[in-house]
Length: 273
Ligand SMILES: C[S@@+](CC[C@H](N)C(=O)[O-])C[C@H]1O[C@@H](n2cnc3c(N)ncnc32)[C@H](O)[C@@H]1O
Image (tube, rainbow, N blue to C red):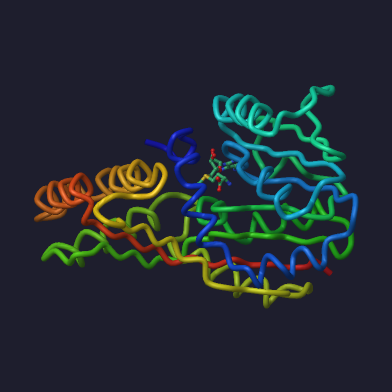
């Protein structure tokens, strides 16, 4: 299972909606110019587009890049249908916002742009933080913004507690850290790097994912979201003593509607010099 899975990304939308920090979002909207030129790194299924429209960003251009060609195709189809977009060359238009999705490496695709905003949601924990900041700075005009919501920061909680929790979660985090380019504490690393650079860290807030059953059931498609998270953990912990029982127990709890999950993240808004 990869992060570019359509059902996982679509199921994630309601979890993200609850998690996003409103103060960071409001600072973003207060600072954005009108007629905004927006690029998004790791756009996935393009869930940012309806969110921006809901927030009143309805004119300018949006260009979402993802390295996974299949998810780019799905982003085009899903968002155009959801938003009833008018087809235009290379994409579609909603109100005065022209939207297109492209396949590419987001650390290279925006070089030389003069964008107002780079969105990188749930992205900095998948790539080297400093290299991504360099790439985004090169994509922005002077005073341009990097909005990086839902940046994982290496804290994971499953409840109720299980005797193998500490070993399983440590192995899961070690697996992320051992993946080339990834840093399990990307959230705090991003905050550090933004403070050290010449620009301004305009806002930061916690954006923890909290998925919990209500009356024994999960909202929207969040049971599927959590099943995918468990599959990420399963891929990382097969050698850990007790992990078989841990996974069996967690999957049963998910079926019964008794499993709660928390992942700590940060929303960051940074303005380049
Ligand atoms: C966790 S998903 C988040 C998707 C979307 N931002 C969201 O929050 O719904 C991360 C996405 O980044 C993409 N990705 C990872 N590294 C990339 C890179 N270097 N360039 C472009 N896309 C990348 C993956 O294919 C995946 O679709």
